[in-house]
Image (cartoon, rainbow, N blue to C red):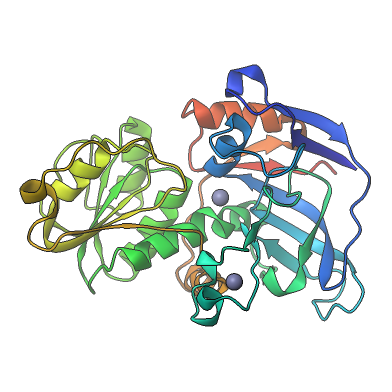
Length: 334
Ligand SMILES: [Zn+2]
Ligand SMILES: [Zn+2]
């Protein structure tokens, strides 16, 4: 099969991705073989390609926002029949036995494995995935608008949950890429007032079009104190900025898997009055199912920038340079 692999992790200008012909993957027990229709490009793919997240195995196929169809079932697999449309997301598997799995926090499982990091992902014609970890997807939406829901959407949703936004509350969103634009729409549909802070003028316009109450520069103070905030930009310098924008008792959730260093915080200005700073680590399957349910209820507009499969390296370079509006998606040829 035709695929892209992370051949030489390093700056995107050095072309870390390489196109490769690989043997067709074979589904093991409990796994599905899936033919890829569309794979969305996540910022995590960029972190993997650039080596911010060190490779866990050589020459891995990235990509963990996959919409495809079941092509075959492995041995002893109870799963959706061939032809079913399914989504493959970042969380590939967990142990099911550790203290975290047993208390419903499988996102913290030390033995968890991730699509496109511990196993080959969706920048390829085919991939395998455990049947218990794929999501059934509706037939009535185009694959390219479903794909970004699978990481950008799900992780953003978990960040929203972790931000503890009270009903009808005031939510600040720092950074406005693929994940943020979906999260903002779900929050607005559920009754929140959303203020967006981002450096990109185009993203500020998009935020206002999608119903944000205000849109300012990335370090600008919002027009009112925030009950909750989510930091989507991978910029540690914005942590004190966002904490200072919180009202008493407010919570800041950091959505990214990678963040530059956080500067020294001042207890009075940034944390006192019971402000809370939280990280967000992957997601549970329950988060995924709940987000996909909300998405089919509220139909968020999914802004995408399409690329042909053969332009995966260009899609990553454009993402690195902030040239992508919404989510970049790779469309399989044919
Ligand atoms: Zn576990
Ligand atoms: Zn992702």
